[in-house]
Amino acid sequence: MSRLPLEGIRIIDCGHVFAVPYACGLMADLGAEVIKIEGPGRLDITRDGPFAGVHADNQPGADPWNRTANFNLINRGKKSLVLDLSRAEGQEVLRDLIRVSDVLLESFTPRVMRGWGLDYPNMKRLKPDIIMVSNTGYGRGSGPYSHYPAQATTQEATHGLAHVTGYRGDIPSKAGQSFVDFLACWACLMGTALALRYRHRFGKGLWIDIGMYQLGCYTISEYILDWLANHRIGERIGNRHPWHAPQGCYPCAGDDQWCVVSVRDDE
Figure 1 (cartoon, rainbow, N blue to C red):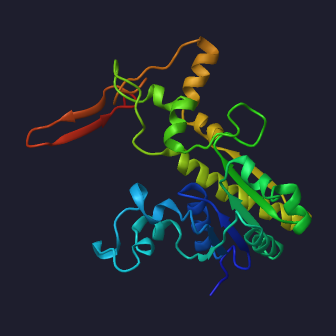
Figure 2 (spheres, one colour):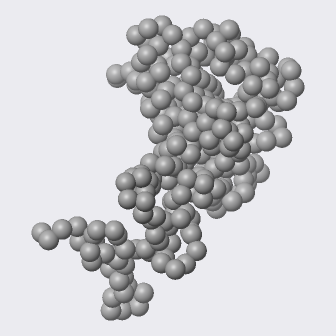
Figure 3 (tube, rainbow, N blue to C red):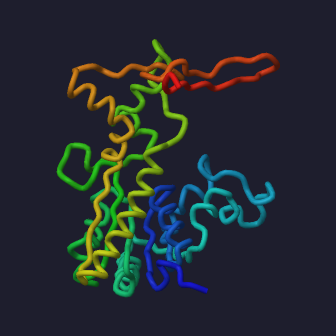
């Protein structure tokens, strides 16, 4: 049987909720050894609560925190380690793990890793060729939002997707799917793959700094270009399309029957 592409690669998953954990789950599918880190007072929210999904066989069982659908989907194939990173002992265990690992992915606000002395310059002292992937709301620069926590839903209001989502004359709405979470996941996955390729060629590690805000701007790129070129502000148009016509979701004969039509051109 042929080797999987990431066999022999050890990855530390310090992510939370979706983007980083799902990227690490995909890397486990590709053969990597992935170690998921959780805190004793801060287990992943997909174990319980609104993001957890259903329990296996709809039965919580004696350990419901281990049986929710979303947690098991996102974190499949991983090893699990609980560390209290608020204590020096827990931080030292993580340092020991960094010394024998290839990649660390994290989704803390910028102050957290820096406060633990585990930002990228310090990680390089532990392992010179370590790869670090940071997924934050607004990047790790010096901008006014850089220290804000964020997730896809709240970001739709800041990068503008909410403004063009919804019906004409109505209030801004959330998109049907949290697109930025998926974009961040794929950015983490591809950033890690490219950094591993770079290390293989040049023997050096890399730090990949991902800002979800930047990724969100891609979802409204045509509106941004329209403003830059024409000073025209995008509008909410419901199920319509700026240039496909007719387009919409139309009622049909019968009880709650619908048909979606989108005509792209004359052909």
